[in-house]
Figure (cartoon, rainbow, N blue to C red):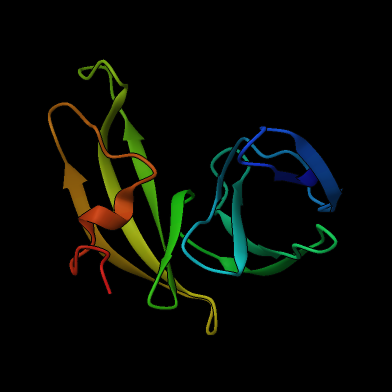
Length: 135
């Protein structure tokens, strides 16, 4: 896998460099911070958090966490989500669990379960954080 820079005006991709990571089954790429995080999961294994060097593309492993999707940094913590499959919802998703990950300590803390009949929560999970995701 490689890290690319995308020009927002043209959509052109410029390669930065290899991450040294294999392509996962599930992954998330963070927003909200000058540090770029990626979370990767293979099958049902615990997701692993990495930082990505935006100059070289190289990944550095930090620790495991509980969620893999929608990572966003708020107040120095990396929030992410996991989900549960189901068949009663057209999206195939019935519940999300949100977690807070502290990059400095490598510790994950459960934040909340979120269930809706028509699951609409996605990568914008910061809106659903206890403080609204706002400063």
